[in-house]
Structure formats: C-alpha cells, structure tokens
Length: 609
Image (cartoon, rainbow, N blue to C red; front, side, top):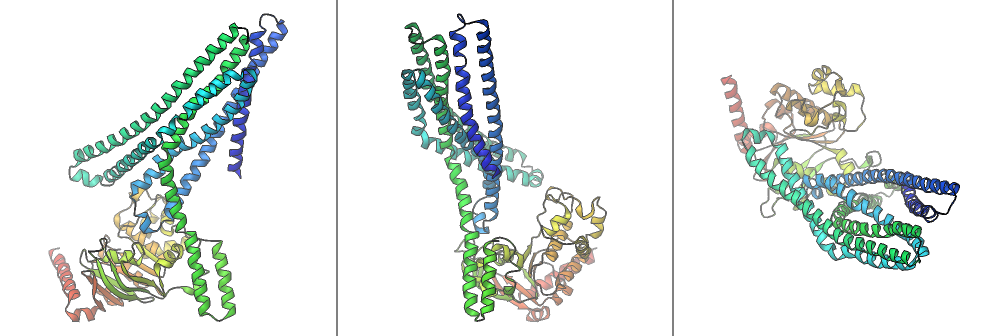
C-alpha cells in the first residue's frame, strides 16, 4: 500500500509540475508587456507574482526529484529481493546451468542498468507525455501555428530510435556478456590468490584480466556511444526546430501579430515541447537497449515460478489423492484434506508437522546410472538400501564416484537411468523444504556465513543456548568458544578467516547434530582434525539414535568401522563389496587391500615418529 501511495504521489507531482511550469512562464508576460505603461504598484504586483510562481515551481521540482529517488529505492529493493528469491528457489540443476558470475552480474550491473535505463526511461517518458499535453494546450491557446510546427518536427525526431532498436539491443547484450566474463575471471583471481602467489602467476593473471577488463569497458563505451549518437541526431533536429520557431515568433512580433511578452512566453513554452522531444529519443533508446536485460530477468523470475509453489502444490495434491485411495478410513481422509489446505497457504514453510506420518524409513538406490557425459558413466547400475537408523561408511579410491553418489542422494544431480527413493517415492517428487529437513549434508569444508557462531550452527533454527553449548562440548569446540570475547555470539569473519580448517569442520558437525534430520551424509568430515578427536567425533555421530548416517572417508579407524552396520566399497562406479568389517576382511578383496595398505601406512608413520 505504501508503495502504491509513492507511485500515485509521483504521478500527481508530475502533473502538478507541468501546471506550475506553465503558470510560472505565463506570469512573466504582464511584466514584459506593461513595464512602460503600468503604475509602480502594479509593477510590484507583477514582480511578486513572477517570483512567487517561480518559487512554487522550483519547490514542486525539488519534491518531485526527492520522491522519484524514493520510488527508485523501493523499486530496486523489491527487484533485487525478487531476483534473489527466484535464484534461491531454483533447483540444483537449474542453478548450476549458469556460473556464479552470471548471478553476480545480474544482481549488480544488470540491476544498475535497469535503474538507469528502464526506471529512468519509464519515469522520463511519463513526464514527457504529461508536460507535452499540458504545454500543448497552453501553446494552442496562444498560437496554434507555432505549436503545429513544433509538434511536426519534434514528433518526427522522437521516432528515430525505433530505426535503431535492434542495434541498441545487440550493443547492450554484448556489454552484459563482457561484464559477466570479466566478473568470472575476477572471481577466479581473488579466490585463487594463494595459488597465484605461490605459482608466480601474477603477470599471467594480470594480462588475462586486463584483456577482459578492456573488452568490458570498450563494450560499455560502444553501447553508450551508440545511444548518444542516436540521441544527438534527434536533439539536433529538435533544436533546429526550436530556433526556427523563435524566428517565426520574432517575425510575428514585427508584424504586430504577437506582443513581446507573448513571444517570451511562447519561447519558454516551446522549450516545454521541444526539450521533451529531445529527451524522448534518449529515453526510448535507453528503454530499447535494456530489453535484453529485462528478458534475462524475466527468464530468471519466470523459471523460479514454474518450479516452486505451483509444482509443490500439484505434488501435494497427487500425494493426497494416492494416500486417500490407500486409506479407507474417512477420518484420516478428512484429516489429510485439511492438512493439504493448510499447506496451500504455507508453501515453502516447515512441512514436518503436517507430513509427520510420511517420515521416511530408508533411502534406496534402484539401478542408478549417472555420468556428467552420458557416454562416460561415473556410476553404473547401483542398487542399495540405507536402512532406518543404521550407520554406514563409504570408501573408495579417488575418482571412484563417492562424491557423485552423495550428490545423487541429495538430489543435486539427477540419474540418467534408475531412481533414488526416499521410502516409496522418488526424491525428485518431494518439496525441497521438507526433503532438506529430512536429509542433511556436511561438506568437507563447511561454508560459514558472516554471522555469529550461534547462527552459523543453527542456520535460522531455534535452539536453547544450553543445548548449543552441550553440542560444542561434544565436538570439542567448547573451550575455544568460551575464550572468545562474546562466546557463542562471537562473529565469524568472512569465509571463517578467524577459524582453523578443523574448527570449521567441527562447526559443520555441530550443525549436523542439531539439524534434526533423519539422514546425515558426511564427506570427509574429520579430514583436518586431530586423529584422536576425529575418532571421538565419529563415535558421537554413530551414537545418534534413529538417525541414518553415511560417512565418506579415506581413514580406516578399526574401532569406528567395527561399530558401523555396513561398509560400502565403491570402485569403477559400482558398489563392489559391502558388509561388516570382519566380513570384508575375510573376503580378501578390494576392501582388504585398501585396509591393509592404510594400516601399513599408519604403522609406518608411528614408527617414523
């Protein structure tokens, strides 16, 4: 409602501005025409009238500028928020179709272009139309002939940008693409700073980014130059018509068809028609050149709308029908129907309460095949079921497909063949909000936000400070946090610069413990932690009840492996062996060879120490 009032207020002020400008121009006429034959008292009145109307006109002008910037602020906040929401609502497959530089460019430079080219152009065109209409009415009253001449020339010139619309769009598109490539290389340079320094690649990277920087700025320059040339051609024509109109007016004064005061008013009013026609081509060309960016944003916003609320609602409806068919109990059917009505009004909110009866008992891989290149599958016909509350360890050599398997379980990538099931349904059918409450993943190096330790652990969930401190004790971070100035409310710096890699991992483990998820997936969760603490943390994870855990590791701790329900051995994209520790050792197969080598290396390290 407040934004509607802002827009309505802006529209009214533009209209008021047009009227005050006309009145201000007209107030000068009696001062000029009667300066030689009026009394001193009337002269003072004319002077006060001219000054007063000018002050009012400039006051309205100032208010209009301020309100326009307020409207721009509101517009940009909403636009960026909508874009960010649309990006976050994308599924993994859609999100990763574009590089991060695409999204950074979209939310920075492209938003700035929309501000300067779209927003300013829309406001400018509206202002031009209103001012032209009001000024035209006033000018027709004074002299229809001069008005007709101005409209004929100015109107023709304002249509000029239409001839160059395609070229303007192409120039803007090239500018946006060059900016995206520059941001991509800039991100690489800053993110790989350590590698660049240690590998002495400074000169090479400088040359590389200099080229992209130059390409970007040249593309921006060419786009701006083209817009300016089109605008200049139009401005030249309208300015020429302005001069000719004044010449015609002077001629009419000489023929005593106009007074000097009327000529002055006409001269100022011609500006009210000619100047808008000078501005109109610029606004139209700017609006045309922003079309590519508008389409890009519409694509992002549109694709998000296709895959979120509508899709989730349709899936819930399907579930309702299928489960009601299975349930002949009328009370249960009525309960489920009421449940779905609640969900319709709370899409993307917690589904745990409403869908509690469908909590999953297992994750199942059913003949899963996947490859980033279809002709080169990484995983081949994998069949396996992860049972409720059981603990699993996944081992395999580098490149065997361990991380890819986890991506499939998390629905980050989709199977080429086969299906991943969460209980009875393919995981791709579940609403993301609910699925990621059931399944939690800890990366090898967890991403940390520029926020407090408390918020980085809970990620928006609610939990007591006492419970968080208990978990910090479990993961061995309690003492470290207690020595910080603000305890668990101490701020983590950008990318966790004030924490070690091991401390970041422990925060990730604390997240997992407090996530409330029924399936926990860990990717080398103790890779950078002291071996003794690592074993303690693994014991804590394996002690969680009613939680299914899958731990990817290259560390062969006998005490931990003995406690797990099953060890999976991945090789050449297939689960070649699985079973308990002693069973796999007795097989003398792939696992036995890996386990023996790991034990030998451990003993050798101990001996060397």
